[in-house]
Image (cartoon, rainbow, N blue to C red):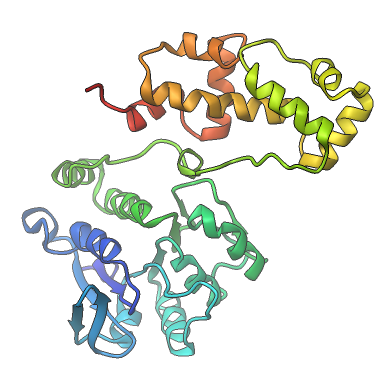
Length: 321
């Protein structure tokens, strides 16, 4: 067996069984008729012995950091506390693995663990969107990109939230053994072999309305109630009782963006529940939220959400009763 095909996953006291299960489903013996000939999976801990996983469950494995450092693929799931540095022993084991030629993989906040080794310096990396700013602040030499579901930097790969770890595992399987096997495994797991788009479609709130200026806030509230209508800067300035020049300056100071960019963002956001819960066509939805054409709507939707309106609808559509 090629050394690259040996896979070790790190388990910690706060490991999410879902993440460990994803790794086991793709690289372990869960689908033994498909995967067994291709990978050898070990679960490793810093100190061999019983490891509590919560809910009264415990994991027991004889494999420690030496086994982790000797694997061809090392997977680091969510770390117990992103604000707490990993132990020097774990950092050294990961550096040894990388020096030997292993590929390092993280899921969710596991990117903080990889970043602590210094191996992500100068590289692109991602993590869960809620922790992206913290990762960038703590590790300024890492090029943090919160948009993708996962990033492949060759010998180091990072992914977003826990579920994106499954996307990355299937991606690795596809890279190692081709699309046909990856698609077959995805079908067995009843999941998509590849998800379009990035994390933007899962972020809870993209834009907040700041309260610093009454005129600007009044114009924003008015715009949200009239999204389907043509809205210009002159219109918004009139609602705010300001000149256009003063309005633009005040809006930028208050929100950190321009009125048009803010308006486009909210028009796209207003379209999401229509895609999720109605039978309206893309043309009807574009018109309902104020876009002058479906083409313009699709363009701005794709730029913001990193996927198309049609694909978003397929993913998030609420079935009719």
